[in-house]
Image (tube, rainbow, N blue to C red):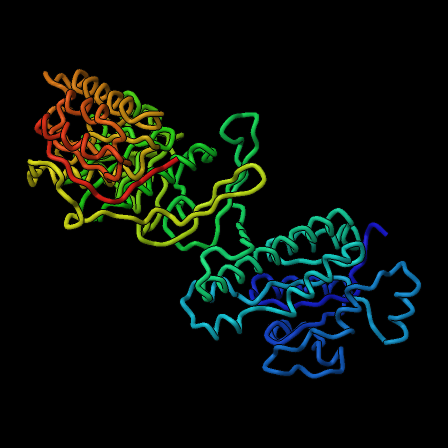
Length: 526
């Protein structure tokens, strides 16, 4: 039978959204309604007849509600094949009535964990009967309709009204959705339990996400893509509100995430702006105001900033918005926006404006995943941060206070530049960035070229690299990259150290009159 009429339905939900409307529609369609606990009370209080599951099974609910639906009269009614004689006979012999529709959403385990609840409370919010019924109904979708999302109630009700029941196509779609829900639920439990046991990398690593949108395409038009969010409570691209503009593309999402994560490295009392292109910063700066920070960041590489992403670590205001819209920009992301700025951005209908409600916390631990052929790599997020008292001066000359401040800024930015990464900084602004090269010398040279070109565009007589400091995300394996920075006008260098040729590099720095410090921490970003 393609269309199955709904003669008996079981409703057992923790989220009561739309429950009364669903129950009323089922009653109007002539269905008997079974229910449990709070769901039964909600339906009954609305004046809709309902039969408690305990009355249906003849077996009382017990053990604080842990055992109520785990009964042959429930699972037999869900799993029985209505077109198989032996199943029909078993139902008759044991007085098992068929259940044609089940509406279930599970105990709120994920929300309980997110609330910071203790271990025992989290355990009690692991649903057992719910997933069992979901899986039973989904397995037998040839005859049973399983609804796990209140958003599907209206479509199911409409189909019952027009078709006299649910179609096989609908039941298959809902069954697939149901298994996705139980898989995600179990993934959340498994991940939490592993963490409770101190296991960062258990033998089996489940992941789950909820689809936010299907993208128009992936990195290229011939690729399909979608955006999913997980349960991580972290302000950013997955939690942002889009106020205007076209739907974000796959590349927009990736670049915007990179931009916001970068500016989140800087405290809110240090106005900071990053301009990102292809997941790499083309300009980052701090200033007394966000406007000053933006103007400094733009000066670093105004050519690459065209069509870029702008991220701010403070509330976007009117003057800053006025400056940003002078350059073609794809996306602006900030923790908040003033009404004045929103109106200014509104003049650019295709410019996407996102607010996150807060900044990401750099030390917050999380797992990063990258697929490879036949599997995936998993690592913790790079939460490393170098402090001033952890730096080791290795040259004859120690850095000045100004150089030291710029060094720490440059190294923090370098953490968000594709390796091999070289970052030139002067007075709290990047003046040249070399990213993603196969050797460090070329990254140094490219960054120096950017600094020279930026000076020309600004009408400055000398390269912006003059008097700058240089950060390298990893050690210099040879002195050539360091010497390229010295030739460009840099006066100080910050790098992890740890090369077999460290002394050769230190000697070269001393000969060039550079100050150099080792961090002991590397920030590869591939």
